[in-house]
Length: 234
Ligand code: KIV
Image 1 (tube, rainbow, N blue to C red):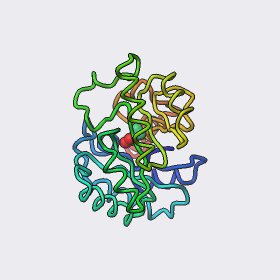
Image 2 (image 1 turned 135 degrees about the vertical axis):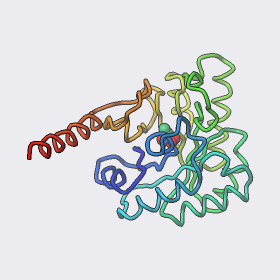
Image 3 (image 1 turned 180 degrees about the vertical axis):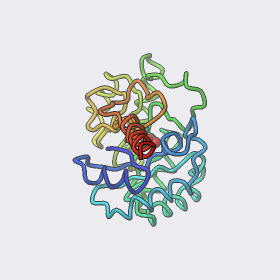
């Protein structure tokens, strides 16, 4: 699964061999210049989902419910329906056991839900909070309870972000729904990466767990500078 935020990134990912597209609220950092995801609004994700849908997506399109847009069952369903009407096939939301009633309510109302546990970026407002979780018994127990609860509530899949790799393997073996990892080792059923990190299209330092296969940021600057040089030489 690869994230996308607009028509072009949606087009590229849709044409690729990736199996799913995530309209992630990492859009806050990749596209809107925020430091964290918690400033992203439902309107931001709706606009991105609509733009990506104009591609004519042939893969599963999952859109994030942003921070504070699924505080109650009613609010979660209203916002999830908006995302589905904009072209999403499913919604993703952060949280474990404490979100089980919301997930159950959405799935009972025929909304496909992807869970997201481990590090939950919407609760982060300090970079030092990005660390691998599940390395001690207390964290491990919580993450196991959360993953079981997300599955029992009817989610069709679950993202494990920055979960200790042997714990991620244990959860993957235990659950019947597919796990999708980021910074959680190689044993999850699938992997997710942020589009801009993957292609190197960002002015910012990319996270340690990001995979970078190109440097489009530098290539874009070089293209502009070549044009400026050629124009000045006219
Ligand atoms: O918003 C996002 O890009 C995400 C992925 C990192 C899982 O939630």
